[in-house]
Amino acid sequence: MRKLQSQGVHHITLVGADRQTSIDFWEGVLGMPFIFEQPNLDRASESHLYFDPGDGRLITIFTDESRKADPRRTPTEPGCVHHIAFAVSRATFLQAVQRLDERGIRHSGVKDRGFMDSIYFEDPLGLLVELASYRFEPPQGATHVDVLFEAHRIRVARGDPNIAEIHLADAIEALVAQRQESLSADRAPKHPY
Image 1 (spheres, rainbow, N blue to C red):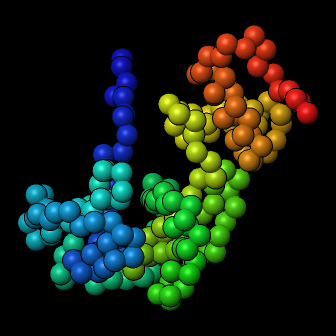
Image 2 (image 1 turned 180 degrees about the horizontal axis):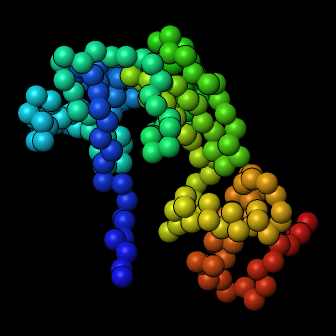
């Protein structure tokens, strides 16, 4: 028996209401370019809208002009999607509260997640959306996942309840030491003053 090895999210498809509601939210609020549209190949009465969330992957929406936006919270029972999170730059994140407030969009305010900051709000159909901004940049040649994996190992070894900035800094230092050789025989911290 062998795995079916994933290599990333290809796309996420959501059921939308009418076409313009989707365009106004995904492109008009979240800035995702509307890149193409075609019929839903499994249901000709629906249109299939494609948006670029910023990483070259896709968010797609099935729309039908007979469906109207219903802002009630989408179901969160087992098997349902709780929320979708999108990465934003620190500069954009620092503007999120103001920009959501300008539109009258209710939101959670900034949430401290230890290794990132988040803000939550609902789309026009009640889907919970998160804007997330990491508090760190991974070292050259590493990914955010590499840093988080190492930070998790450090956190568990220390008995700490969750990843905090100290774990991130120590993880980055460990990854640099693992990935980049040095001519120094002793790479331990020093106090040259």
